[in-house]
Image (cartoon, rainbow, N blue to C red; front, top):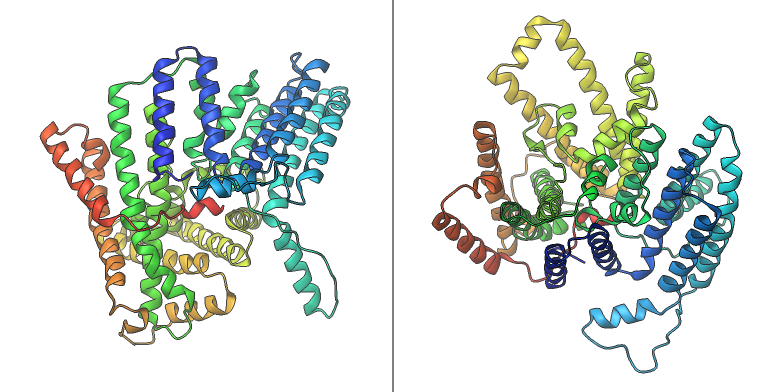
Length: 563
């Protein structure tokens, strides 16, 4: 379900009314969890089973880590039956054909089978039955281990299950294809059948989110959640479920201790933030996307200036698309009374790659730092090992974005930039004149220009998946060919001017928003709450006109849904 659709607006209104009408916490949690399942299942009901599986496994693992008395044999059996029941409900009915018909605005055709027709239904149900039987037995065996071994065993089970599901759905075919190609290049012939597996929307986000729960319990940073319902709500919380930010348990679970209430100030502030996010997505990103697609569909033969334009426009597209989603997610959660941390802090004004990663996709970069880089040793080890840890973290972070070699290259590129940045920063600290120059106006401007050029090159690696096309684009980007004509990009037509115009408007407004933040500590969405009502009414009217004339003909999915 997309934020910019009527279906989501109806769901949001129903949830807000329910929060206002229901005062008991448990019933509120039930409504929100149900709404989250409806939101996620709108794409494909079958994939809800994965969220149930992650919730049950991590709920059990966390209680096993602390050896909770709540996990009686009866409770373990009930959790096993829950998995079996969920498998039957989500996999046995013919959901794919029913959903396809309903999304087309039709009723299922007469004679449509009631039982699932896809080949994986019964094997998947068999697997859930096996887990339901073996799970309680494994739990009993692990509880008999010595304390530290028991804790590690349950943590390992959680990590293996979560990463195993992620690897199967997202990376199985990638590794099969890579192994086949590598063997072929060495003259060997191997035959491994690739699977027809659909990628569950947002699986990387909620996998990292639920893993952080068991890791934090293992580290004794939080106590395990006693309620499976509350943990399931944490895993499936719909405002940020499919594209983040990646929530930590300490950022969400404490809010469930008290009933949620609606307040006028939070509703108003959330509405303004949602308005900002929606404008970024539909007025900027979705209007820039067509030209980006045209340029990178067949980049061969394009001039350097066209490739640079495409990279710059993609930088605008991905920022407005992703930060727009985050704005809307934060806005909806704020309306409910739960404040989600920011995920973007004006990254395009960064003066170093290190600073860029502290401002871009903050929830992922901080997750990689806390759960991967630091456990590897971080910077507490020798200098060579520190750089190895940095490269491992960024390469895996690149692979997290997608099952494609260009993401691996992109991660290695970012890791190399961070390593060089670290070296230069250490050099500047030991060189007085270089440190002084870096803080001057000229120093800041040059550092920003270099950083901008580097991350624009990085966006090329991120966007272009075909290696021959990528190599061509990188050569044209790095070595300017002197051609100034834009005709190859189709700029003689009207639509490309819409894209360039939308990007230019974003650049101006984004710069003013950054200046406003530096001077007042507030952004547009916050300032709008404090201005007189007539001014707000004018802004609303202007936004309505902009949406009316600038709304794309089709609602495009958010870019990060694929991750």
